Length: 299
Length: 319
Image 1: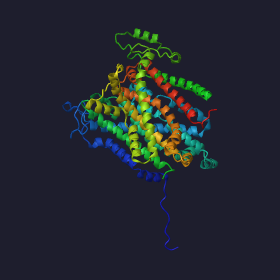
Image 2 (image 1 turned 60 degrees about the horizontal axis):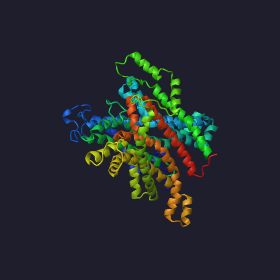
Image 3 (image 1 turned 90 degrees about the vertical axis):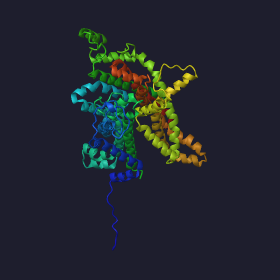
Image 4 (image 1 turned 120 degrees about the vertical axis):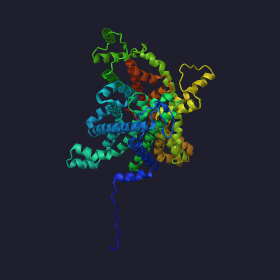
């Protein structure tokens, strides 16, 4: 037919669709932009902002915001903006790495429990058991007891980082495992899995190639929200004096140091606290947007 | 039903035993010596120190120590604190009422605010109120409790001098003036805890209501000519609250966790504050006792949640 219009449009993948949906969620986009800004703030900030992190100057101690010290100074006259930038690196890294650990464990345990019927009940028992552990008190105790050993083994920064990330990860995989197991239980009955099995795919290939890609979207949502939770947990530990040692700056640690000077230097607690709050809030909005965008019932 | 409860209780016992083992293992495996601070006095000669270890049973092999500990814990004997030399049980009993008062009031307030907020924002979805309450909920779970606490102290104690920022547990309520003081000193810790609870529960109530509103039984109720108020309160709300009640029960242990931070900020002498202090002092018997109490709370409220679910939802029958 002359003049026929080509009725084809570019192929759309699930992730492209999701991105399209996500962009329409204004608060989620605002959250994403804020979070990316905070990441740049902590990664590039210290390079651009030249005020040294540890320069002690008692003549300017406990001063509020000024042009030379936009976030003010602490009791030793150190610049809080510079410390907040450096501290954010560790806080955000703890959030991301501990969630990666939790997600990996949760995917692994959930997949095995959901796929192999024999292992289902013992693994779910284990999950229930972990869910019955009092998480925050246990974290406090573990950090306190093992801090010094790991500190001497791996150095103050890496040792404590590994421990905090490991413990938060090990105590938070259970919701992901439950989620993955439930999806596996329903997906393994589906025709496409049967088809894969009938052409002789081994279990490992069916799990990795066919089922896991289908459970990734709820896991991604859980992971996003988990990052916010992990940042809160780390800052809570540091705030109770049981997180990173005093020579390693994190946002929670800054608040811990600031809390005895609330009456004379409220800015010291305010800026790091706002940064934690903004980071977690932006992550929660991103998670909310992802949940809407990845839900095929909406659109 | 009673058979189901009995069975659940029987399942709870092995769970508690395993948890007690985990608690014990962490404390026993720790490289920190429980005697590091107890008897840290350099004048104590090594032989004496060794004899103290012997008398406390610290040199026994760990299975012996575990069995000794668990059997005495089962008789509600948590041993003696290294620091205050008093029985752990007494220390906990002294402090538990403070924690329960703050946590309990905060939780009740949270629930009382959350359910109406969640309900209204579900009925008037996408209204100004819904947007406001959604924003409030997001702020509620994103702001760290210690930061809210510090902000409140800066505003109401440091700047405005309205409220005291240290909780005085010796205050006895005898007349109106002391009652006023008690309320004044409780406002901030309770607000901090209630904010988080309200946010979580309101959000959950809203999403449950939204699931139920478009269902057929709601349309039936409306088509019978029932008043909208009646439809919402008697039909939708009742059904939506079933999972909310479970969440409320399951959330209680987490609130105790949150109380650790709040007690620390406002110096409320509760068990959370005792835990942080005992960890700092290496007071192992107290730490073990409190951890176990937290674990019992988690297991207990899991059980309560399960049973409540069965009572409230007649579709669930336990065989």
